[in-house]
Each structure stands twice: as C-alpha cells, then as structure tokens.
Amino acid sequence: MEPSTKKRRGEWTETQLKSALQAVKSCQMSQRKAAETYGIPRRTLRNHIESGSMEKITGRVPILNKSQEKDLCKRILSQIGMPLTPKIVRKQAYEFCKSNNIPNFFNDKKNIAGKKIFETQSRNIASKGSIVKSRQSTKTQQANSFKAF
Image 1 (spheres, rainbow, N blue to C red):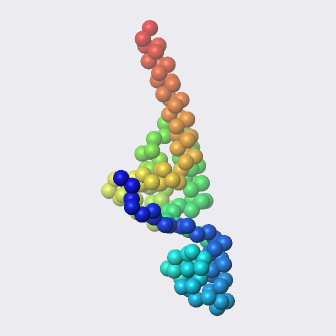
Image 2 (image 1 turned 135 degrees about the horizontal axis):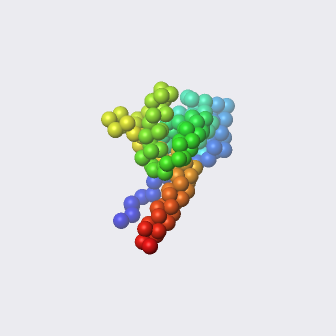
Image 3 (image 1 turned 120 degrees about the vertical axis):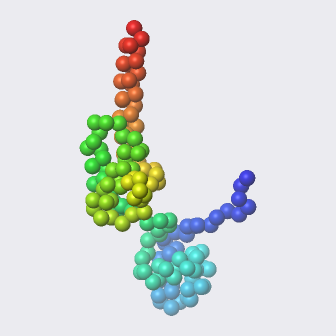
C-alpha cells in the first residue's frame, strides 16, 4: 500500500537557496516571503541564515569525512589477503573510529559499526570485496571439482 501523500524533502536547489539568502540579507524580502517565493521551507532558510552556509545538505551528517574515509579504505584494502565480508568492514570502521577518537553512534557492546556505513560510505570497498569473494569462491569450486575425481 502506497502512502497517501508524497513526502516533500529537498525539492529546492542551491541556486534557489542563494537567491533567497541574498533577498533576505539585502532586506528585499522577509524570511517568510523569501521561503514562499523560492520554495524553501522557512526553518531551512532560517537555519542557513544563522549558520551562513549556502550548501544544500539533507539527511544526517556523515561520521567520517572524505580524508578519513580514504584512510579507512586504505587500511581495509591492505588486508585483502582474506575475503572481505561486510562484518569485517564494519569491525574495521569501528576500530578506526575508536583509535582516532572520532565521535560515532556505533555499538560498543558488539564493537562493530552500523550496517549503513557499509552500504553508503564504502562502495569501492564493497566492490573490491566482491572481487575477492568471487576469486575465493572459484578457487573452492575448483578444489571441490578435483575432489570429485
């Protein structure tokens, strides 16, 4: 069953935001009028006015920035001798954040990162891991075929 109303999130662009911010800062329009004219939610416009940011950012802020993500990728891909599973990547991400004192919301009881970090932030690791897994699966298939003879 489909929802009765479509959610309207992030239907505005950075150019609309910049235009609205300029209109409000130059006192041409009020915040309410600028939000209505440019199709930006009022609270979003107010947040950008207060922060001074002109970038469109929707959703949660990522735990790792780009340089930290590259460091984590290098660390994980250096251990390519064994097949990479999502669980290994998640454990490495947890250890990386703990060793570098990066604030996170990971599970301290299980010592593992969440599943979404694997899905969203490590696409190239996932593809490399699938290559390693496919190589290993072909080796095991070859070994099993030799056992049959």
